[in-house]
Image (cartoon, rainbow, N blue to C red; front, side):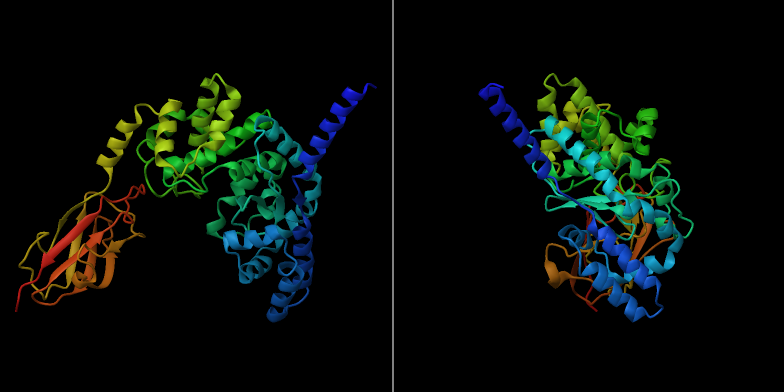
Length: 434
């Protein structure tokens, strides 16, 4: 063989080996968990169970497992509770978890396919961790952390022991996530490449997640099997209409990582919205590699970049400035105070309640109150805050002194039932002298 072709071949082989070596997949935390599990199940001594969990699992944790502990704030008590409470679940998922190694090659292949599409991809190590059913996957410090007790489950996984707060998992397991783990891994890898860690509202977080769901379809050359994407593609106009009424909400719980309390029968519909926007942007782009780089490089913490990108996708039904104006007009507002007029200088100091009425029902689990411009010197002594049953008013139980000016502000932490933030409402009044 001529020397020059041989040299080129050697270089290519070295580059290929280097690329694969850059992606390490670690699975030994699963083995350590099951070693601890078997020993814990063999004793009823709770103190010994805690010690066994620590010595056989926690103390042996990889960097990735330690990161998962921190990312989801998992505690030893959570692990012990799950081990004691869900024995049929653990038995049903055990074989799949202990067989995690069979997925490594497919995952590494997915990484290399992504690298072809996005050559500037930074390397990221992958860890199969064990959590307590609160994360199938996340990223931190450039690592991909797989929650194997969720990611390696399938339709045969037993869920009848789960409490209400885990009610979303049976539906997720029915989609056979373990068969889709290479795709899910590319999704998480995209997150390690994105410049922003989180979005700041529903639109930005939907883009953050949706872009990470769309790019794997290019790398893996197949569509997303996510239930949200399937439902969204069949109901796009309906989803768009509702999304445009809520997209600037600071709280994403109806659209992302939600259980069953969203506007549609399928959870995580924010993923579909971002996915659909990314798909349209890519399909309309003349320079496909550049479009991929722009999608992955979109900083979803940058409001100007997010607004500009959403506009350029053409996915919204009208200009984003118009959508924003409609959202602002629909935000909940305080209409009046029952006991006195806001700004009054003749409030009776014996007043024990301040009742504020809203223009619609509010989410009663949330309230947010701040000092006014005068700070602590004008602070109201608040004993309690209670919503009316219908959520249309909130009562502040207070103690007032005579001849004093008071201020407080109802903040954006108040939100309506669709989680749209309250227009801040400053309260300012002065009590009479006795």
